[in-house]
Image (cartoon, rainbow, N blue to C red; front, side):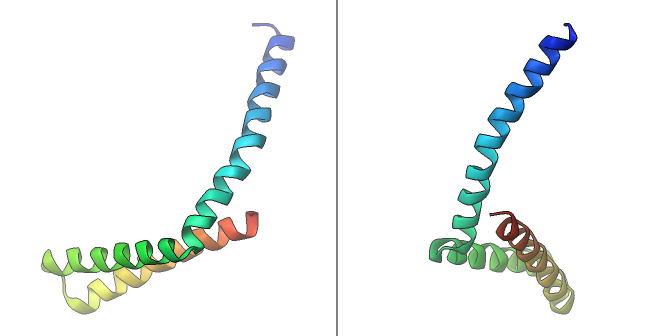
Amino acid sequence: MNKQDAVKDVSEVLDVVSEKVPNLIRGIYEVLFSEEGATSMGKGVSTFYKHLIDAGMDKDDAMKLTRDYMGTLNSMANQLKSQG
């Protein structure tokens, strides 16, 4: 592959990325900040906690890990929010 073909390929990839990524971020943002998204997130976090308890983890440790998990989800959501 010559340099000109490589530049053309990169250009085509960047065109696709610039078109698709903003829509993807917008879609994820809408899921995270919609009523359905909030409900789903709440169920996911409670399921995470329940699985830790069911596996025999101490409730305080399970709560700490669940808080960390939710913090990670919130951090990701905030990053998407700032890019949207």
